[in-house]
Length: 285
Ligand code: GLU
Image (cartoon, rainbow, N blue to C red; front, side, top):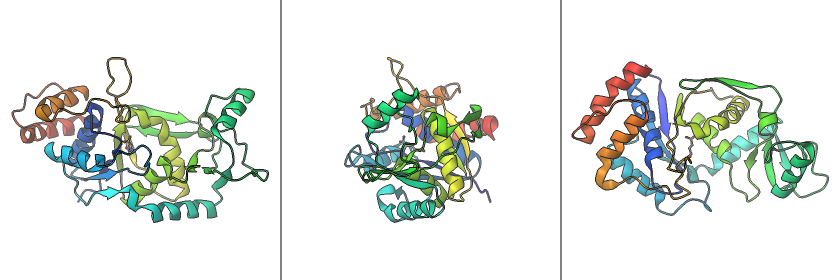
């Protein structure tokens, strides 16, 4: 029995686009190539950004691509108690502190200290000086985090310097992506994360969190991004063109080529998956 457990974890901020298909395809093929499980998780923890109905619509599109989660789909809106528990545990272990800073104050302090804009300068590490707590942050250390990415190779980041103590619970009371994703990858026993390279610089933060929560560290594969004509990454939130339901074979073929394989010219979607699997296996297993 294979211990491989992979996942595709879209945020329902819009319809799946060519970039999401690349992540869905690669995570699915990698799971199948390892005789593993492939899970779908809808990351709907950000009501201001989520679009009502987008989660169901994503699942429908996946079904038309013949992609089905091996286990019931996990919806992050059901996971409030688990995130609360994770925060409780991190707090008990001394990894969490309350922060009173506004974004504007952080940017002003960054420019005063010569830090990159947005890096948290640690202002509230030793207390807020009586100011009301807005967000909860994770206490980082200067020790660099290194991991091996199956495509990109070795990556090192000093999280304290490059990001600063990062947010676990936001000022608007919502859970931060970092806390939710690590809690759920742990809960679902995910061994392998295959996703877009836009998240590669989030990975060291997630490794720090997983370590602090006593969770195993998954293997990582970050995929080359699909860019639009202006050279920007496709983003659901910014209204990237959804997959064309009338040309799913074409969409699949383009995603496959984007992953660096020659077109398979498959007649059906079923035939595509069947033909792609041994090629993926040959290259990545
Ligand atoms: N929910 C994130 C997104 O749609 C992806 C999370 C992940 O793969 O870690 O961009």
